[in-house]
Length: 184
Image (cartoon, rainbow, N blue to C red; front, side, top):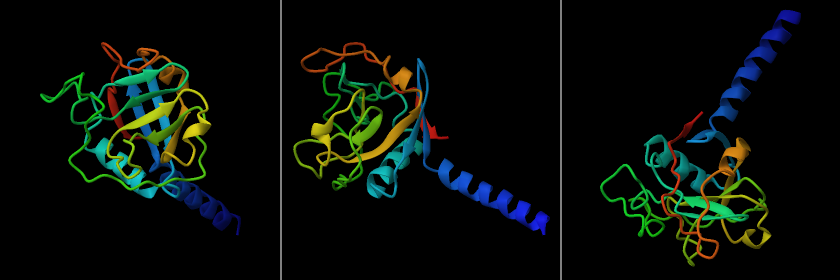
């Protein structure tokens, strides 16, 4: 009887570990590795898009084009912000997205606290595409206004080291970039 209990516990732990691991991403920065937990139960379409772009290598080499100390670091412009491709244009970074259609807003009860990953967008709530930001500090004014879909669970100290931009605009000259972003 005990053997069956141990086998059940073993297989259950394998199953839950694999399910959990599917929603953990590894963001590699020059400062160190950052683990991100995604929330597909809260924002399934944003998580799906984020994972799709990451697994296709679209975020690799993308710069943090807008970084405001005490607020957030924005990245994810795979069209103009990817320093590895011929379309790279730092002055245009932040105005592009992917070739995929925009993602409709998925406002949730997730508070924009330190480490939250949320979809960047224009004034149109349904205009999120590939860009996202990471909160340095709590930003309650963004709650239910932007689609939060994940959180940094390890390595926030490396996010804190991302080069900051102009205090007024957040524009960054010679910005840091994503080395790679993949499932863990």
